[in-house]
Image (cartoon, rainbow, N blue to C red; front, side, top):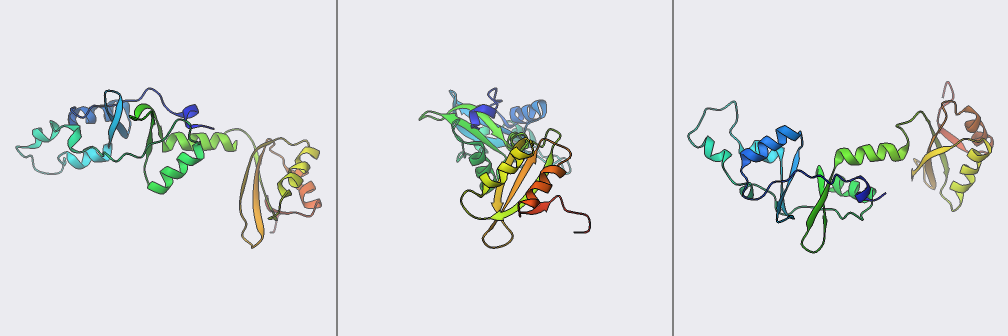
Length: 215
């Protein structure tokens, strides 16, 4: 799945000459945490609700004469210019890694050599998409199998689901807890996975989940 498939295209933006008060009002009105800063449609920075809070006077402090001037400060004075962005043709999992690796909450989506802003994707969008990709938003069951780390093993195991006539919604593979092993997690479209679990065990595989009573 590509970023262009899930990005928000109707992006709330501000310009560098807009004031902090304008940003604060848009954050509250649209209930958003990040606002791209654009100039003639091109991305030049980004500002977050945290940036605004840091710049604004505290409600717990004493009023100062310059409080009003702070609200009239241009966005360009506090916006972040080194913006990490995404391309509409990036994969969703790549965008998720960028968010994770950089500890950020959103990725403006840009196109062209002048970074024309065409969308935005947030960590919430990524989370919703991953939930849908894994199939956990519909009634289903979780089956986790420990297998040898060898070529063709996934095809061998999935053949058992075909025999059991059990439809698979998603498959995740990750390193096993023991050397030379991998764990494969299947999300299957049934609330009673006992038949396919029995077949998997009968074929000699170790089923990590669901566990038998007493394990």
